[in-house]
Amino acid sequence: MINVIWAGLAIIGIVFAMINGTISDVNEAIFKGAKEAVTLCIGLISILVFWLGMMKIAEHAGLLDKLAKLFKPFISRLFPEVPKDHPAMGYILSNMMANLFGLGNAATPLGIKAMEQLKALNGESTEASRSMITFLAINTSSITLIPTTIIAIRMNYGSASPTDIVGPTLIATICSTISAILIDRYFYYRRSRKG
Image 1 (spheres, rainbow, N blue to C red):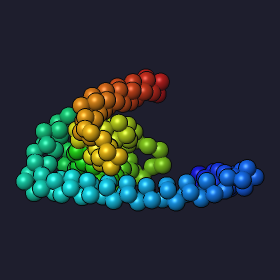
Image 2 (tube, rainbow, N blue to C red):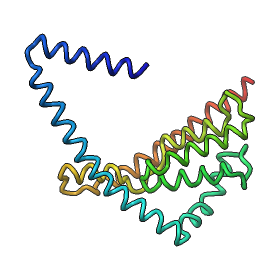
Image 3 (tube, rainbow, N blue to C red):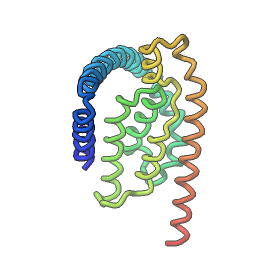
């Protein structure tokens, strides 16, 4: 459905440009946008490769395992339906660590694996379990210590201080994660009382 909407918007824009005689402006915008997209992607790739490399170094140094052990008691309380040694718990923790370091692209496959494992725990039901809903809420709001993608974009566009975003991002993501957990728990307990 979304493809139809995008195609419709593009067609309407082109027809409107032909009627107004501004098709040359549309062509210029298309090529300028494509050039900026390539430049942005190359800049993002370099930053992501750097931070993915740092993540690998942290993994080999045992830092990720230590962080996972540190967060495991808290995460176990958030996901009481998930056994402590189940693969889902490992994927959830890995996803959260990747998000913590601002590596959303690395976190995505881990999040998908976590959801697959949570679905298996849910008996392959088509209805989301409590743990699946909680994971989705936390993953969407995730605390970010180092917003690598935003830093890369700010660097690409010549920001004088691209890392100034770290403090506000940390505060905003802590607030959003706490809010997500509170809202998740509110609706869970509200539904439990009705059921």
